[in-house]
Length: 222
Ligand SMILES: NC(=O)C1=CN([C@@H]2O[C@H](COP(=O)(O)OP(=O)(O)OC[C@H]3O[C@@H](n4cnc5c(N)ncnc54)[C@H](O)[C@@H]3O)[C@@H](O)[C@H]2O)[C@H](O)CC1
Ligand SMILES: [K+]
Image (cartoon, rainbow, N blue to C red; front, side):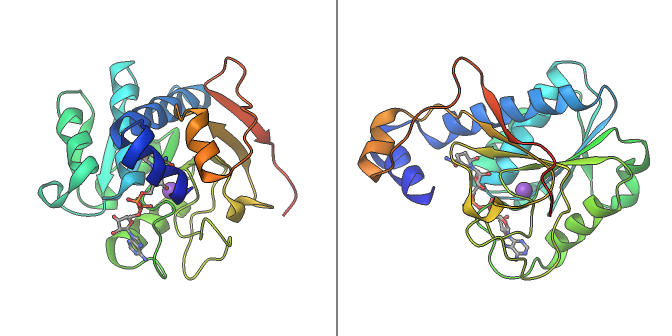
């Protein structure tokens, strides 16, 4: 997936923010199918957090009550996550919660886990770790973007705490680390053209057939 990203961003396209918009919008659509109630979005500072913040915007635009909790103060966000946060400020989403106690977690109909994706390095630490533990305390279902935070996208190993996701929306290609994982697994189309897969040497039969997401498996054992 990293190689696909590199070829897309560096050469063929789409650019990162274009793929992220598709990811975030599709994530919001899946979230809407899972709850009519408040959605709490937990977001980190990487591409995964950026996708979560984008989804928060789409959910709020569609009238959902959205509360966002970051793994750091908003003025320390960087790159695409900072860009997404800037746009999100134009919505009615509740921003700036710094403590888990202020998120309204107990009233949430769904928690979106966009803390860490395939950029996990070592056991979750600091605020990232706190947010993983927050997701696991939530009485509602948890929807993880790309991989449950804390799970190694390649090996499936968990070097420390990890989100116990009920539903996962992974992007473009199913990650090997999700094989045998619990929960419903969905795959999102983020708009990558065939040429990118061809250059990466990946044989790719598009599975979407007119949909923006497809279900890969539902509640498998283990
Ligand atoms: N084409 C695509 O597949 C796209 C994928 N997107 C999403 O981007 C992420 C990968 O983004 P990246 O910036 O490389 O990394 P992450 O967001 O996964 O992680 C960085 C983030 O996590 C924090 N972090 C990492 N390790 C730890 C740790 N041990 N403890 C605490 N915090 C940790 C780090 O500080 C950063 O904040 C991919 O999974 C997709 O979800 C794009 O959105 C669209 C294109
Ligand atoms: K995640």
